[in-house]
Image (cartoon, rainbow, N blue to C red; front, side):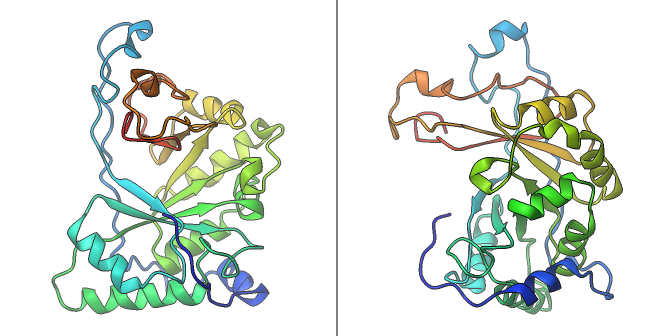
Length: 267
């Protein structure tokens, strides 16, 4: 979700606070687990799967709009979520950008959001609001190295039940030799079964991603991201359906999503 305007404070103190788990225990703040809609097994041989309707055998879970920041009113987000329950808000986390650049909300804004959700919960007429933490930079690397503290804090103190990892150069991560993190990342995923981890799948991350797909965890999902968005945005060319897209059902039973290069023609 593109957003502009000024972004509130944030600095080293907030980064340290984000890493320090609170003593209050888990708080969901109305952020409930996503329905685990799993794609049913696709009919037909693998070489024919790409020729059928792209969404054949799939059930839609939600639409994630990422990049919410201090320019967006927490009240507005809650109002939209109440009307459109399939919307999930993606909050970007990157140490050097947090609360300083557009699309990176400050922790002060996250606290305001939490307060707004708590206030609405007290009314008794409140539907769950879905949020996901999108980790880049050193935050993402630390998780892949086996450090579960940040994810635990995001779950316990801020109510995030989904965490997306984007270990790519575009997100400030050296993507060379990502497969070396296979064991350590899996240990974090297993240690926090209450959190669904989402790994971005691109050419850069395929070594790690495919290895994890071969031994899927129940709380691990994959986001297939188009490396080079198609320039024919809004077109109806059938070639858009396969541009930058993997076969729709490479690993039946795994929660998956698509991102990047999603014009009207292939959405």
